[in-house]
Every structure is written in structure tokens, then in C-alpha cells.
Image (cartoon, rainbow, N blue to C red; front, side, top):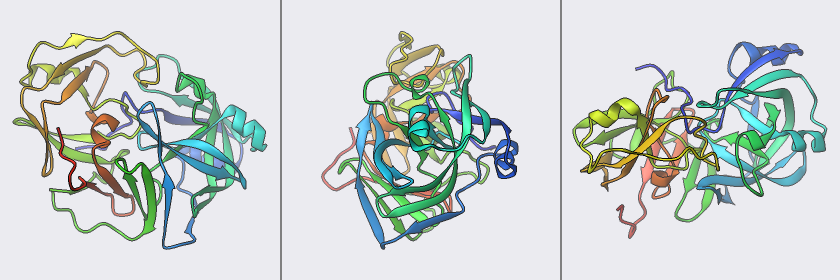
Length: 311
């Protein structure tokens, strides 16, 4: 199976164009490069996690200033800051870019820039290429996050999102070997972390998408393959923090169980989206778990805290 692209429901995919500096041209020809240096000044750092429309948000410092609220995503191919924040910090203009959300007809113009130092707790990222864009094209509402940071771009560190405790932990180390029960490996070509998902007898590989507020999103073609409690019902197009763009969406409840490794979820609600290529699991499901990402070894671990039963 080929790598999972950033699908409908992710915040944005970045297509970078016309950068002027030589290093920024590498950003154009390929995906944004990983930061050249990530330093953790302590064995582990723990920071509070807030939720914006169900999505994880953390406080960061940029070039020694802040704190600023950044959404922590996996459904992005790079880091983004708001146009206002880029101007406030005096970030350099290194060329033009296009930031496109799947499901949107028109992409958003953006600017390639660079952050010298971004701090998340006691973790420090140096020399980070980013794009700046109008965040109102990504989200709608008040007190919007001022940037987006890819949670899967910390090679050498474990990133743990403890949804029940509302905190995020970064520490050195690596996850144990894949066991197919709580630890999974995503495809070497995959843009997004991925996990196996069984819906009754239908087995899939779906993207783990922190930027997706809903639970299970599947391509429209699966509505005829799954046993549902009723016919899927169309829901109104709604651009309020959903990230779904102009896609047509229907929703139904699975007549049966969803299995993520050893974990079972009874009768989950599923959204079917007409322009989606691969399935996604979002925060409505993930918030029941402690999720750990090992981007160096491309592994994911899901844990359910004692005393918390999955519905």
C-alpha cells in the first residue's frame, strides 16, 4: 500500500513554490525538510494540552517570544504560522507558497519563512522552515491558534499525547517492537502515521489524524461495504472548525464493533466523504487513549488508562 496522503479533514497540505533562497528551494522541490537540530534539555518535558474544537493545542515560544498557541497535528506536511505572528516576529520572506486544504477548491497563498528557535517546554527546535498564511482560511472562530506544528516531526523523541490527563510529554527513547495489539508501524512511504482498523469483517489501514475533530472518516465507497444500523444521512456543509471544505458528507452508525489492535469500540459513528482517498481516525476516537508517536522508528502506541472503558 502506498503512503497515505493528507486527506480531507487534515488542516492543510503544503505545496511550496517560487522560494528564492537556495535552502528554501529544497523546500519547494520536496516536502519541507526536517529541522536540522532538535534538543531536549531534560530527560523529559511535560506541557499542558488544551483543545481547540477537539484538536490538541500547546503553548510554544518562537525566537524567544511568546507563549503562542499552536495546534499539534499529524495531517500536515510542514509547520505553519499565522501571517500576523510572522509580521509580529519579523520572520524573513523567503518566497511564495501555496497552502491547500483537501476538499477546498482554491488554495491559499502563503510565504516561505524560517524560525531560528521554537521551544515546546524544554524541547528546542532550531532552523525550522515554515510557511505563514492567514489562519482564518484554516479555522473559523475566536481565539484561533497562531500556528500548526507537526507532532510526527520530532525524530529521536517520543511524543505522547495523554488526552485523559490533558498533557503532552516529550522524552528520549523509542517504542518497543510492533506487536499489532497496542504498537503499530506505519508505512515507510506514509505521510501520516497509520494504524490498522477492523470494522466487523472489513479490514483497513487508516491515517491517525490529530487535526480531525470527528471520529472515523472513510471514503464514500465504504458505505455499501459495511453493516450499518441505517442508511447514511447527509449532514449540512459546515466550515466551523471542521476542516472538511466543500466535500459531501454522510453519516451512519456501524452495526457492530470497530477494533484498533486489542481495543474495541462498540457501534461507532462513521462519516463517509465523497472526495476522500483513504480513511482517517480523528480526535473523537483518539481522545479515549494515550497516544505515543515514535517518528524515528515510525511506530505508534495506543494505551487505555486503567478504569477508563471504551464505549
